[in-house]
Image (cartoon, rainbow, N blue to C red; front, side):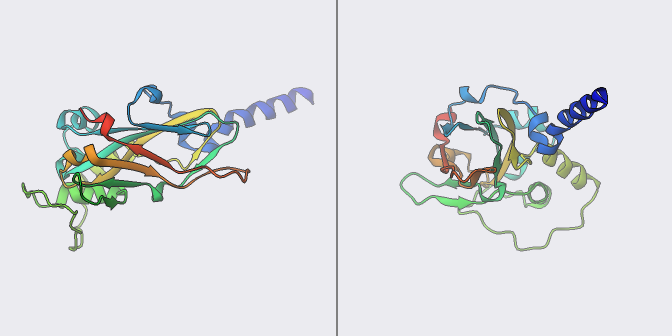
Length: 215
């Protein structure tokens, strides 16, 4: 009986990372504390690594990349040094970007499907436009190339919304900057909606200046 109980407890312990989602199975490839664009308080570190060159995108995504559609991919790292898990509302993250001396535009993150639509259907207009124009035409029928590219973007995206205690997770968040990568010198990445699970303590929002990461 004791041996049976020991096996059950061990099996439950092995299953715990899966219950928390992708975070437990996706260790960071670099130490996020070494990235120049970061913010840390209340035992939580959030760091941002924006990709700004075609070479970076090709090394990570291959032949076809978000860069082809003027999309900014920010690799975001979350490190939780607390004893409690943290919930992350991915939908409320924002990029604030604009020319120096002008009001910053608030940009919402794109889904992998929206990235694929912009990369594969957006006109190849060499003249950038800012603020970002909305795409009014309905997307065309999705073909095999679209499905494969969307799957690639999705697999690299930040997708977990629950960060276990003493764990690190990372993934990409995508924004349509219409090739205005130079505006990142006057841009901020905000993560406003975070909460400890099973604890009423609030977590103050994170505001990360991206300028230090631009060379």
